[in-house]
Picture 1 (cartoon, rainbow, N blue to C red):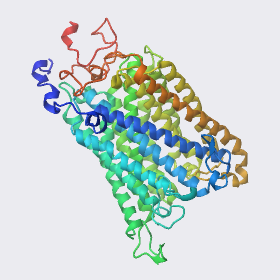
Picture 2 (cartoon, one colour; picture 1 turned 90 degrees about the horizontal axis):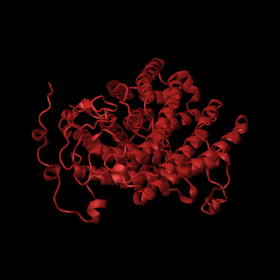
Picture 3 (cartoon, rainbow, N blue to C red; picture 1 turned 180 degrees about the horizontal axis):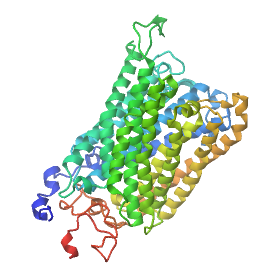
Picture 4 (cartoon, rainbow, N blue to C red; picture 1 turned 120 degrees about the horizontal axis):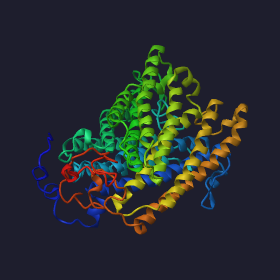
Length: 600
């Protein structure tokens, strides 16, 4: 017997009467300082896409140096280093990879997933009118801007292409703790740390909002096990942020105190600071690594879990099949998140770790392969035998799964202490985390942009341009990053401005030149995506409410959804993946809000 109450009893008053003011805001209130979750999601999306172009440009300068060492970089008809004799300094190279990692991780991957798509999808997919705390949601976006300003100051502090923030995106002491330590000199590293703090505050605001919204504002009938996997992934990600971020924020403030107030949290006794003044007491540089990676390994899953959930939703719609193993997919995400908190030490195998402790981290790291394999096989099983629609969405989802497999397999190698000690500071590591964080995550983001663009903006993106963008990006990505595995196995070190000073690495120069050409092609291919978004906003084919014939509640709302999202509160009667259901023999989808009695 059904436990659902009648629709009229559950629906209550319209959301607009209970959650939103009735006045119509002006342009600034509507599009700039908006509290509407969809506008905030669009702000996150466009801001992070701009940051992606900037971070990618930094990467191309890095690749140019490795392919053609100490030669000037042609840029917009000029020369980047014309004022400094036609070549960058080693300190500037160090700053480049520091800021590239900073921009891509803290200003692109995390905010485009948790910020952009979390904002756009959570209220729509659970049948809510908005986030639980709309103003807090607005602040979570606007706190990105002081973070970007601080990172810009950290970069701009480099005079004459000298040293800015240049301690790496991990900001390890002592290099990052001492103001006069070259190349991390002056105020640049302090600006960088303040930027990191603002990012943490922004993410924490979003985390609290997401958890509260998902727990308290689900539509009638939307039980936990009727939520789409996108919502489950966002919920688990928000929990990860809530528990991990305070550790990094506290560590960042401690490092600022070491730099500016003379404390010694991370500075050992006897270390000379400033005007040859020895420290009083003693700190521990390795403490920073423990605190940093206690956040930053869960952060890998903060960057990956939302993409996993979204790809699951999109694969079901593109293959016209229920997600294979819905509950195991949920439990595997929970397991990945839980294990993610106890494996941070595998980033520190080369720090002189006790072998027994190293073995503990080794085993716990390898265990993550089990829930990851569950998800991988379930995605493949979802595709297998389905009515596959070869859209841009499907192609990018398939790329996500394949890149996740490659990155995950290399991760198993790196979980082993003796292997990681050999590979740790080589390009094998660079290949691994780019396959996981760029290859997997951004292909998932590309798929999500194409899939939910018609819902957010009311128009379809161009399929021809989308497939061309996918093809070039996929081929160029693998041409750029797959050879890095071989370079790492041959000993090419990370973070070197000129690794060819070692005679045994000279023969690797042609491989780096090939990789750089592929990287340049991949970088310019992203202009196709930007063009497709801009063109489709104004000239794309108009989309109806449900252009993909999907089941989620977001497709019940108009395209684009009005303020408050739904005309009346939707009531949920089914799970999110009722594709090819026998209840509806005349079509292959069954929306979550369609009452059962209509099929009898």
